[in-house]
Image (cartoon, rainbow over all chains, first blue to last red; front, side, top):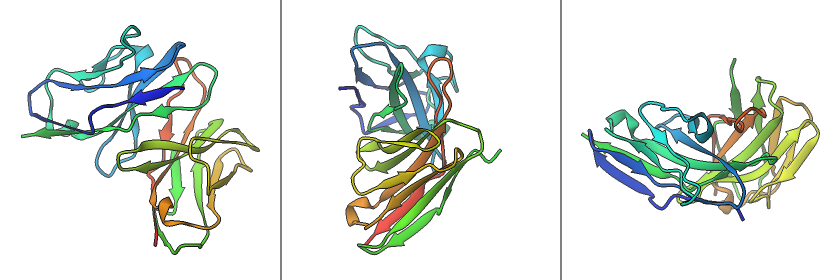
Length: 109
Length: 114
C-alpha cells in the first residue's frame, strides 16, 4: 500500500539555522511527490513538487528513489517559515493524494 | 476568482443531528475531494469525485455521504453526527496537468459534535 511517513511531529530550529523536514514514502512504481504548507489561519497551499525541481521561498526537495525519500530543506530558516508542512504522494493514473501526518516547524528568534 | 470556498466556516452539532457541508470551486476543475484534518493524523481522504455525477470512497468514508450534481459543487453530508466526527474538514479541487495536479484547498470548516 502507498504510504507517506513524516517522522517528526514538531521541529524547532533557531532563525538562520538549516532546516530539514523528513519525508519517506512507500510505493513500488514512480510516484509524484509534493510538499504543501499551511501557515497559521491560512489554507493549505502547494509549496513545491518534485517534477519541477524548483526552489520556492528558499526551500528545495530532491526525490531520492533509492532511499524513497523526499526531504524538504532550507539552508537558513526564517521566522516566517513557521507553519505546518505536509508531504504528499500521487501516482500516475490515480486521482488521489496520500498525505503524511505533517510536521510543525517552529523557527525561534 | 474565488477559488475554493466552503460553507459554513464553523458549526456545532449535537450527537445524532445531520448537516451538509458545501464546497464550491470556480476553476472548472474535474476533480474534487473532501478531507478531514485531525491532530497527529494529518489529512485523510473521506470521499472524492472525478467528475460531475461520480463519487468514490476514500480512506475514511464511514458516516459520510457525498454528492456532485454540478461540476462546481461537492457536498459532504453527515446523516447522524457522532463526537468522533469532530474535526476540521477541507475541500480541495484539482485538474489533471503535467507533473501531477496541484490541489487547491478551501479555508476549512471546523465542526464540533457534542
